[in-house]
Length: 211
Image 1 (cartoon, helix red, strand yellow):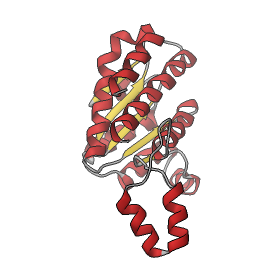
Image 2 (cartoon, rainbow, N blue to C red):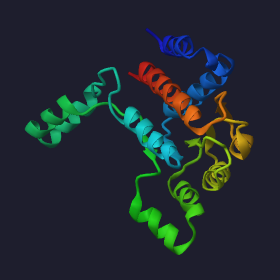
Image 3 (tube, rainbow, N blue to C red):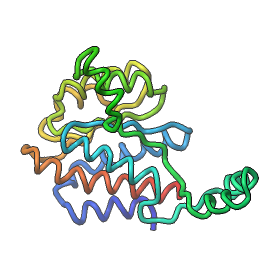
């Protein structure tokens, strides 16, 4: 089984995604190349898309469908620190693809909300956490959410690659993105229903490649 299998399987199950297959593959390649060069993923969205952001980070930061044994060198270093606890950690920790959902930091987010304005929360977090050649995955069903658009602008200015997972026309966010996946739906819940299998496929492809 290889990465292409998961993309083929996605299109078989959701034929309406066939026209955007190339865009899905391009987002995968963007993420693959970022991880291969030691960079990380930052993800954000609002409402259901905020939940999707947490979901994506969860699939990437630990095993999804494959075992992710630690490298032997890391297992050895853990045991050097503490033989018993290190062995326990070496047996149970799983390989991770560094991913941070910007939605799960209430203290920092509410400080920005209180001191500045809520629309700047994600942009501020991206400015603080983002490094050149990291990837920002913006999830917005319309592509026009102001806080997400401002985050895209901040990410681009810091040298991050920007990928957008959206619907409808793609909106403003898609126009500044390096690559966009614009699902062929107009209603929010239908867009979200297609987002989930797409990001599951992306996570499966990344796991297959790296583990």
